[in-house]
Image 1 (cartoon, helix red, strand yellow):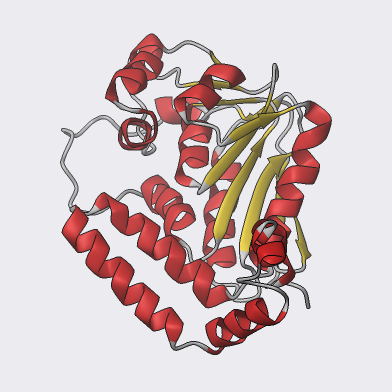
Image 2 (cartoon, one colour):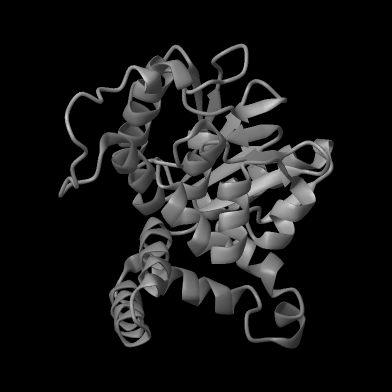
Length: 277
């Protein structure tokens, strides 16, 4: 894969794609950055060597500010609005981040708003910094609404009432509140976030690709009715059971101390050893 972009700096390391967003001065989602984000999402989705993706920013004050309002003002409005049968391009990009067969992680050290927040919500995990990370869906004050998946993602992530507070209030939500509401997985001191996210991404990327892909698919089936979700979980389990990676790692688990008192008292660390090359 080439990963040749002007506003996204890509580094590949041991199955992890680190993508640093860099569009000064505030990481505004201009049309140029948006096009690169869409191309990047498609490219990394197709890269079989990548098992985890980390999105972060070169600007510690801004992860992604929001979509360019000047660009939105130029959207055509001369014809009546229609209910299109297909997703628009921004929705497609966000869905690609949500459904690609690899972990997608956002390292949000500063502000994230509007379409940037919607992109972050589309990823699998979001981590923030105490006293630094700020979320804001500022569309309603502008007379519009979050049109890049936000009205659908936020209620699913933090609940209807809180989503409406975020969307209708259009005000800043601090890191502590975002964490308490479930928007952020965890919050850290500034010096702690990079080592944690990097270690987590490398840990995930060290495990069998089939297990990552099918576990994520099974979790996504939780949006189905429970019976259908359980059927999908059972199917994905049976598929994985037949893979070489599962058979080898289960045997290795037993060899290095799994199902012993000592091993089970530190099973998280033991599981991490299964990714050792």
